[in-house]
Length: 402
Image 1 (spheres, one colour):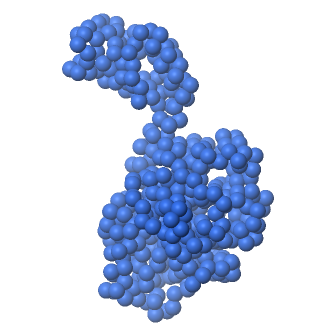
Image 2 (tube, helix red, strand yellow):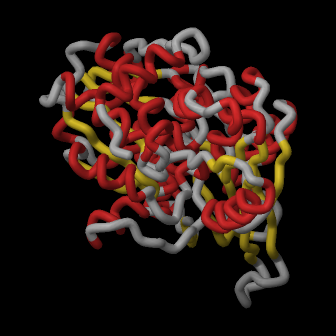
Image 3 (spheres, one colour):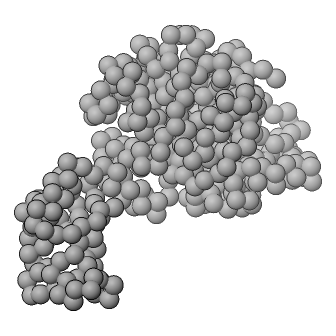
């Protein structure tokens, strides 16, 4: 079944009151950082923390009474499972979700809290989907694809309607791409009402399934690599979603892990928002390669906020390193009394703080009067790191920076 603009409008009416109409405020700090006029569509404020509720509710509402009674099943890395589990519980529909064994713990536990039957199977979403399809036959369940079903795409498209209502002068919308369902629905809605709006899709470099499909002309499997944007880790985009999205996407680009970590960090610092990697990739794209949008009005859908607390600390460390606010290096210093004190004093004179320092005497140079130290310092930015590097070089310290 093809997805039409009328389907999206009907989904908007059907889900009204059940799915939140999330705010889309202007971000002054992000606008200053990027040089664009940035509005953030806060889908991370949905009850289950992501936009996936839109499609899930629409699909569940359209089920026949017989299918509702038998129950539904889905494969998901987390957010689709959460949205489906929550709304299935509200509607009294039994739900089973198959999640990859690598799914974030917070998403797994939250699905269980919604009384869903949670099965951890497979190393990625494709392997989890194969298990779910087997259970469809065994248990006579209805499978709900999180990004390729027409009802799901139409539900996600309601996000596009809200964006145009809230930011009518929008010039561009930067949208994450996983299985392609979100960008398919949103681009259809926006291009139908305002064709001049640029639709820009973003994927992590480590799971570039849309880029592969575009180059081949059809969806194809790509190699899965771990990424901070785990919610976008789909090895093959949906056929229906891809066919629709490719008509409307004006540009797509890839972002690296450092940019994703930095985007998460910026959102924490500047917007006081905790957003998962998949939700941060639109901002990462603004950092990496959208110079043509300088001075334009741009909407960033922050599509999810379900990030493990344990991951947050690691992301902050990586973000600080990418931002030049953490530096790690080795140095050869004197092992005589006062050698370490002199070394530390030079670092302090340059305005940097030592966070960690470790001596290595066993594997140092042949000169027994020296010792190798491994040092992590806190700095202001990349220019500050270079300033410290040059000072240590001037003082005749042999260093190696990472």
